Figure 1: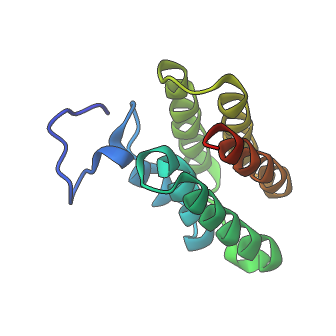
Figure 2 (figure 1 turned 30 degrees about the vertical axis):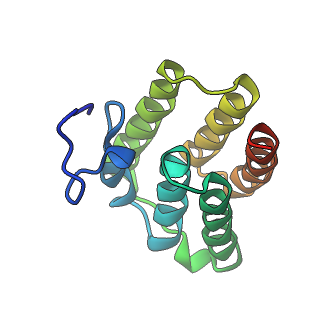
Length: 136
């Protein structure tokens, strides 16, 4: 959904890169997983990428310790969600991202697609460390 005339309020560029807009995904998820997705989605585009990743980890930890807060769509809505997340993951290939960081983020999205939140959390921890190292 690349739009060079992005509206900073309704369609900010940090949510509209690629073929899928972040809200298309997050609106199908519960609050905690939606926020996890949002913070990982935009972490490179804000002023403090490690802080955004840590916020994502906080929301993911909350979802893991409060399973009732981690609902997902089912049936065709779940398939649509998986398709949108896969499109976003594929869009990362067109960006200039350090290889290890890219691999970790793609693995994170794969875990989210498969609804493997424990794996997503482990990968997110590694991604935080890698981003810290890349920006040191």
